[in-house]
Image 1: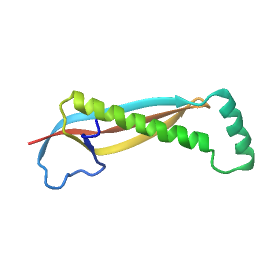
Image 2: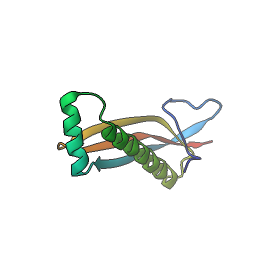
Image 3: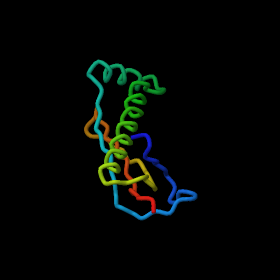
Image 4: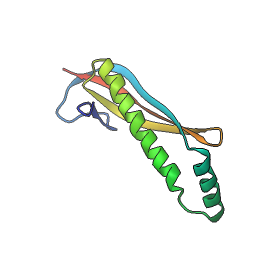
Length: 106
């Protein structure tokens, strides 16, 4: 999957391509109860909540892997204009979406 180029730019230098369509990678993550309690305590004193940062980093990587797989399934060579979106579901779940445009080299 790593051979599928994923870029946030609109153009890939030196490549001509045709648009295949939108591709997505989605995931929803949560932490266990003990880590949520630790995060709540950290919230009182302030500072980075490393467990949630790690969770979001993992979620981002999963979303991009799924985006790449979606592009492969469509026969794409690359994904341009990749973006992320995220949001909370309830108080202890986070959803991350990676989306972009699948393209095929000419």
